[in-house]
Length: 463
Image (cartoon, rainbow, N blue to C red):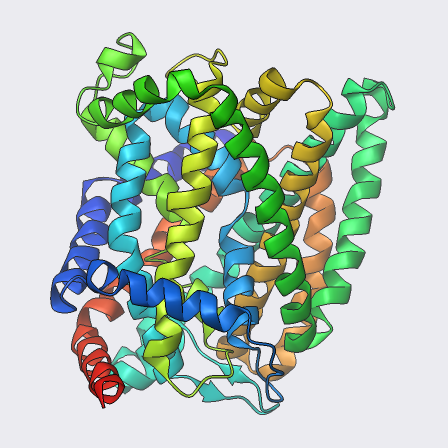
């Protein structure tokens, strides 16, 4: 039975992340970029100045909302996860160094895609019966495209509910247990025979922590993410920059391999990877898996922001993709490639490859810090996707369905900690791709709204 499921998933995955998907994702991103006059370049400085400036504004959000900083931290909490560590490693191992170049390309277009998603989410959001702001693809489809497109909003929400249990929870918990097990085993704290019991305990603890945060409502989610995300990102970035500096002599060759390897993978992989398409596919899909531009999920968090201007919040989308992919994913790639750790091209790899880059540079003691980073990244992702899932469930079944969903969602952590999730990773990747389809359709049809809102915003700014 499992073999049948795996074969079906592989076939669907190959289609979802095949040529049609690449054309749609890149095409919509390019269309939005042209329509907005490449706002991610033209207004990049303005976007960074605007977003970073607002991040340090100490202000309490109104009831039922987050501060703009809390909203972006919640969105980053979901994006800055194992995709930045395990996903980048897998992209390089299967797609070669050139996959990083295509990851950059997807991020370049993704900045405009996410800007559009956030802008639409805030513009078309609404208040639920509890007085909380709710928004995202299902709401800008419903309120922006009209009743004839209601089915598309339902499709997105159903796929969202199915995706969060795998992408947002079980696979993330599995990463946490792997990181903790690795650190405990390396220091002889536990034996191999004790791993299963330890994982069960970890799963139960994560279930309790996730439930405490999610059941506390939108305010508690915002307060947790605004503290956790900056801390984990700072620790990881400092350690990664240290690796690059200590191996600075390798940096020119690595950058050359990234750029030239994008068009001639075999020249840098010994022939193990010779297809430009494989390199491109891995880079683009891993980039999207990491920054979620095109999936629409991040806009669900941004829709909760206490803001009166949709475009102003939209600039956080540009910042978010830049921070996630251009900064953190690039540093992960440089840790792997500059450190010179050995691995086999064409063979799947994950977080262990990134960890080995740190360990080979700093020594075994750094496994404690990498375990902390992995756990923080993964836990923050669980929280962010918990919010996404609750909004999708609420859209489908009403507000009363949120609490039962969050209880079930929290309990899935035990499954993620104790089960073999090899197949689930693949299924999660497939659902990620499927979620993008209704969202990309909506973005294409609502592009004129984004252009109009952006034009009105800058007209006000000039006066």
